Length: 239
Image 1 (cartoon, rainbow, N blue to C red):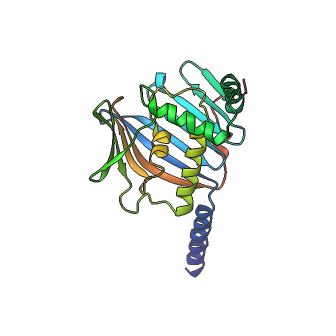
Image 2 (image 1 turned 120 degrees about the horizontal axis):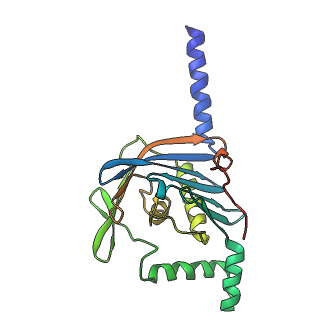
Image 3 (image 1 turned 90 degrees about the vertical axis):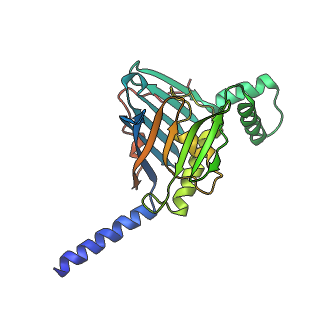
């Protein structure tokens, strides 16, 4: 009896130690279409990369991987087996050369963000708190609704929230290989909420596509195997 109790305590302490020093975080969402089950999505976040898998109808299935150190992003459409890969550094060097840009990289990044916010169709949403939710509008319509995590079920530590914020900000600094088939995926929403006190959310509804992402689980992982277990023939080749 005592041995069993000690084994349980050791296992709990080992699991807690792993969670406190997790190398990556995995978020799993149930996807709903008009409130009906539609599939799932999985999001892995680490200090070096993000990966987002969307598994709904075949023509919308996709995998996005963004590598921060290499500054490479890629999007794979499962149905058509198409790959889109972009080397952010090479791409921006070409743009800077065309613009005869002489200022800093940070100023260049801020310019790109400002251009996004001023574009005709928004690449950035401003969320305002309304009661217990955050709401963003497009052309006067409340199309994007986020429900923050309320309670302790999906609470994250300060370090884990810092990890998520670091990753989404690093991803946003990069030019992505191709926008997803659905504008404003959970990764984008994390970035847009990164300055809010309640960045973590339990539900996100995108009325433009009649999709809802409901958080189902959080896993703390002591590895980054999500970068190895990619779809067959997935490419991260520079171009």
